[in-house]
Image (cartoon, rainbow, N blue to C red; front, side, top):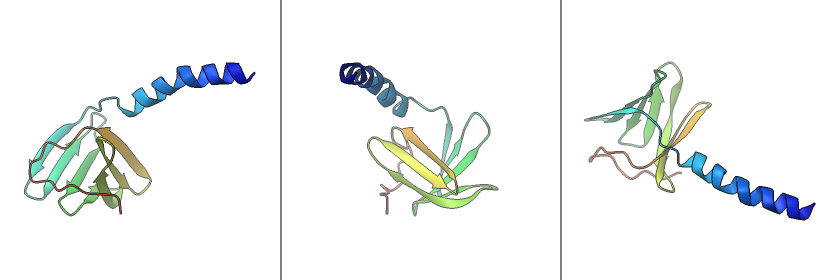
Length: 96
């Protein structure tokens, strides 16, 4: 039984890791205040230069970089997006 479980973990681990690094489609607009991300389903997320985040109608939260990705958290909505923001004036925000 232990062997079967070990084999399962070895086979499932790459799939789990791949899911975390799957590219996410979004349109990016850089502006004087930070960045605006628009996702295909219509969600718009604003990321500010003071590491703040906002989704219209959902509230405000924060964003940060971690492990080759950036993340945002607004209310009950959180998302991890592989890669960096390609807005030169954006700071390197950390989770606090």
